[in-house]
Amino acid sequence: MGAFCKVIDAVLFLYFALMAVAAPLLDGQISLPGDIFPAFLVDLNRWYIAEFGDYLSLEKPHFFVGLVWHELLILWPLSIVNVYAILAGKSWFGTTSLVYGASVVTSMAAILGEMIGSGKASEKLLMVYVPFMGVGILALLRGLLSQSNKSGGAVGKRPVVLARRKRA
Image (tube, rainbow, N blue to C red; front, side, top):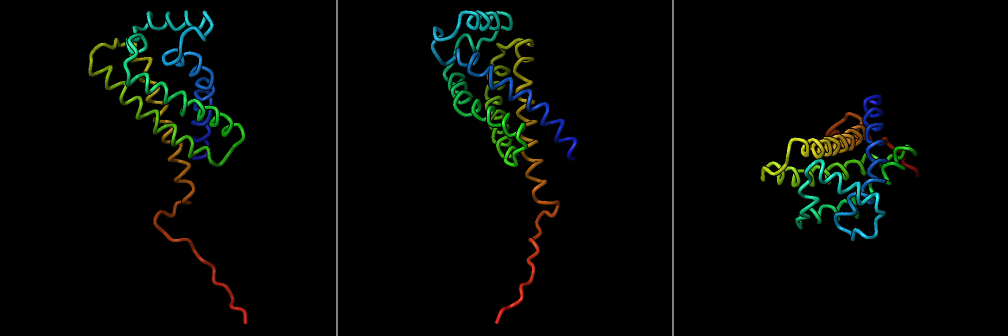
């Protein structure tokens, strides 16, 4: 199980490092004023919207802007913390990964539900968003794996209490 977790950690490390940079620079343009970003980032975002037909980034519906704020205020700091946790081998990485994964899966369920339900999303646009659901599930599973390792395989059993000698 250890080697499997190391592979998952490597994939998540790359993802969290990318999100630590991309979230404020690209997704921030959805909820923050565009004039605070350099022109090349604004142009990159416009190119992305035109190339992939991302109608949510273009139209900015309220639920989507709210999810972006959630990403910037909760998930972005968690990405930075998770990068540190993986590099430093912190024991609490499983917990932060579980929180991150549950949050991303919930957000992506709303976004993908809107895209698929409305019929506005192209196949190309769905192929941009669906991997985020996959990474969310991977982070969630990584958090659950570390939680199951803590139990030591003895699910539902009480810990053994060593008898103490009474002192007179």
